[in-house]
Length: 136
Image 1 (cartoon, rainbow, N blue to C red):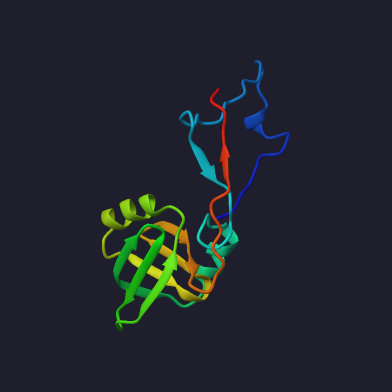
Image 2 (cartoon, one colour):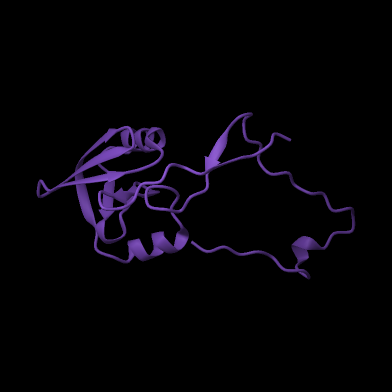
């Protein structure tokens, strides 16, 4: 996954009429988003890229209890990780049951096409640092 932008001089940016600014997507009133990339929070594209090129393991069973996750591997080994958004993880895991793969070296989990940065038991846990966006 890479980030790119169009520089000046691109056909896309040249127009004969006035330029109209797009507003950012609106966030519901009172909503806030986590902006931490610490273990167990948002996954950075570099972290994801490193993880996908490391050895993976299939998960036979996934149990979520609040921010705590129990992962049972095919060989019955159990790992205990954490993730800051258990509601999102639960919805995706239920939707894509049986599609969970972990990358233990990087504490990364993929459920179908969705990636999660998890915290291992040995990682220091931080509560989310949230950024609220004012409604426009």
